[in-house]
Image 1 (cartoon, rainbow, N blue to C red):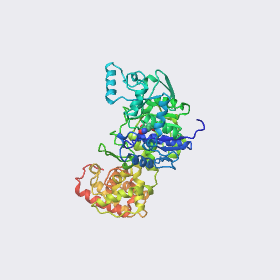
Image 2: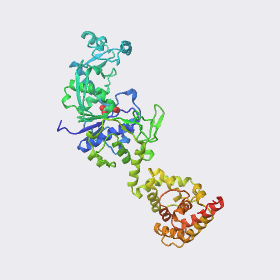
Image 3: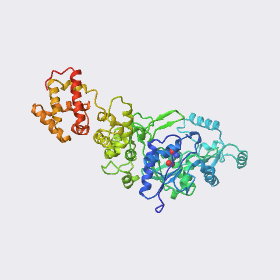
Image 4: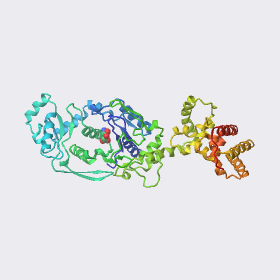
Length: 527
Ligand code: GLU
């Protein structure tokens, strides 16, 4: 075990879009594999043909790529040393049947010929007898039609006649099954609680239980990492490894904690209504006709999404919260993954995006904002001047502080591009009167004499004008803001003024004074 190459697989079933819980599993596998200079493999577990969804595989691959959690081996990746990586293709090669036959030959599995009706009748019988969890097991199999109850001859005949049958695991009665989970420690289960799981279905397809073990063996997987929902079947898996003579070098197991709803009440579902997406990318489920919005399309940065996911159930043991992928790789270990469920926090998720937004350069942000800006300007009927790249970068610099997403930039700063036509009514009502109108006129006039129209110069000039009229600047600042931007809040006022530039600011002030004086019933309140 010690010298084994670290090889982890992410093994999704293409039964739908990849939920963020699945992405987290992939991420943890990736981080661990990279940390130990090992392999991260993508295997597609498509043995359940009835649940196969078209487009799901492509979606999974695109999602992993967007997140930067790229496999170095697997479906669509690597040189194919352990190919094929799709279970349906592996089935064609007879890989699973070989193992199932071996288990039968060694007396650890058996043929079962029971029809659906017979199984149903058994379940009803057990329910009538008040058996809490009716199952096919060491006791009940004795009264069913299988190769343990039928004579050898009969079994041969049934098989030769092509009678539909499955292969079941022969779980021993009342035996202790012990296994170690890196996150949960030692787990002990009595075999009475384990049913005789189907290993090979009547169509020759392996079930998940057999297929993933065979593949983990053949692909030399060192660690099997998956969601907590698989923990109850782990004892059966340990038995299969044992029966195949491989319990001693089976992959190390790690079952990740659930991701819980924001209120901690139950598992997070793909229909969560927190307003934050549950899927990495937009997903349309053609079976149900439901569509889901993705993190990508909502405007999340992949780095922020990944950082947030890493913190769902794992902690570095320090107060650090912001981690690049490289830092996550260095810091990650399964020992620091919690056993208990991790609460999903929509606000914190936005906070992560905000942290990454602030870290981006104005140039990068301007590039991201440009398509949105073009679209908005295309549909406006107001006149505006085509902004320069420098100007757009300047806007990004000012509006990014209070935004979580680039998509908020337009609402936060449309006035940088289009002069206001309306002015915040609350502020006007509270602050506008003859005296303030007069004051704004003085400000406008004195701004005309400011030569270097910087934030510092205009601020000093504004304060001087206020002092000359014995007005505390704080009382008229917001009015100035409303006159130039139309709105009562936003980035640093004099930074806005500097960016708009002298000519534009003076034009806006003159317009505001006229429009407001005409339209608004003057307040009788003195300044
Ligand atoms: N196909 C299983 C799933 O989609 C994989 C579980 C495992 O990793 O063993 O959850």
